[in-house]
Length: 174
Ligand code: NI
Image (cartoon, rainbow, N blue to C red; front, side, top):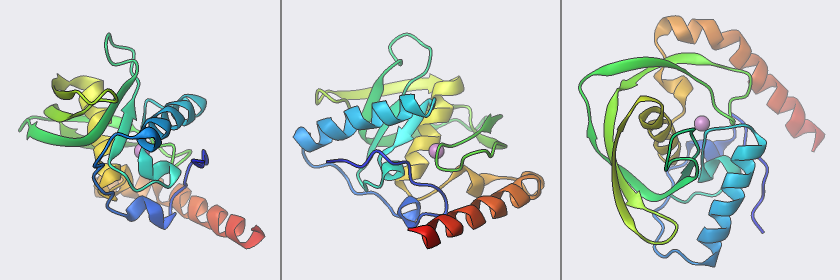
């Protein structure tokens, strides 16, 4: 059984480097369907396996663009980042209630393996490139709040402290 509970910052599982998937077996297929379900329930547009406590290199993405409504990538690797950067506001199901501007490369080429075991390489920009970079960061224990300018950090610091405190209270209750 795969736990459907979203892990919330500062849960240490969010800081682990996830391990590569060696075989797309029943467990990985189940993991992917649970991830789609959890992402949809949370109204997210992306989710990485560590966010439900699984340290495997698997991400799912769902954006309103043909062919990318239900994309799962196993062992994704970014092969190219553009020099050109763009800024977009990001949020994260593991950092609820907090949004901030993040600067990232505008375009990427990402490769990985789909659910059906097909190797793919996707050249993309805009929202899809943004979400994929955010989710792959999760596989390396990196969160969007790590990538903020000093100004953005200051803007969210109070809310982030409150989130950490609320998680501590939750721990004491269980
Ligand atoms: Ni996230």
